[in-house]
Length: 424
Image (cartoon, rainbow, N blue to C red; front, side, top):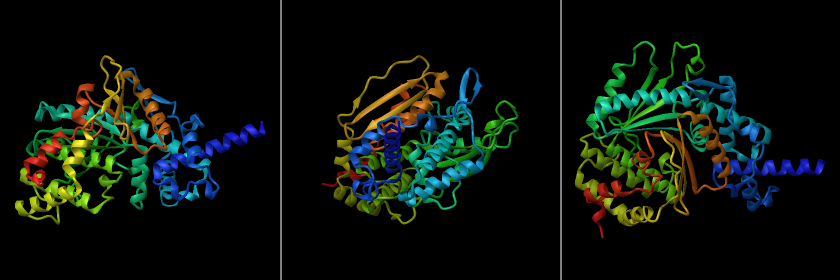
């Protein structure tokens, strides 16, 4: 029995090390047999094992609404913040890991994330009505932030509290034009003070003031608010609503796709300077099309923008890369389910395989559990990205998440129409 317990502990520790490698970057700097830990093969093997599933599962206590069971917060805000601080510290010094504390912190984060599902759904339904009053073909989607992204953000921003992170749950509307974005933003702000509605905490206008990395969009941060005693457990949870034009969405998803295949965190403004500069310039070219403010630090004359962007595109082989990335993706069969609106996407960038699992309206709890399980299963495989999203139907997925479908056609069309892709 003692030998079995020791073996289980070693296997569990290997699993946690693999989880840390997945969350916090290159495992070779601190996970190696030379430093007394398991070898990479042992780590990867352990990562596939179901170690301490009870600690890493989503809380069983639920709030049932309309026949659907939703996860509820099971920890105090202080416990949530302490878990976030621990994970942020591990990001900075992974060698300080304490396995039981890691288990506990990960479980708290997992439950906190899942608890945003109901407020997120409520705000998404409001967003659908408003967005389609502006653009009947608007694409509306929602997602829960990946654990790796949550941990990384906590580490990058000193003083950030997990309980106050406003984009754990996020929904997005993509409308045809910048004019539509402005109209939609006006509708949200006009109705923000009405009784019984979620509280608009703060708008972030990254179109009037683009981010230095080129990102352009409007973000509206809400606090969920209700008078219903049944749902009051969700009061105060923050949800981010994103409003994008079609061109802004094309740019953002192209950045994510390039991040996936170049192995860089370009979305977080981390990586090769040429790639970062190229996307900054492309953002300004798209802003010119929308007659919107340019990204700071870029040429204000179109010809100069094109010349610099074209030079970088030629040096980086941007057009050839985006053409290559969109070829030969293999869509694994999707089990059709009537009325499905939740989808678990799993993209393997190495094999170019995309698997999609569909969930019906009443399966939100199972979808969250499968999401956590998929993240655990792929802890030591950075080439695999997993995300749980919600759209109207499986047919809407490629428009909402072209980066998962390796659909680069829209970005390539903009590249060529701007004359950036014409360099030989």
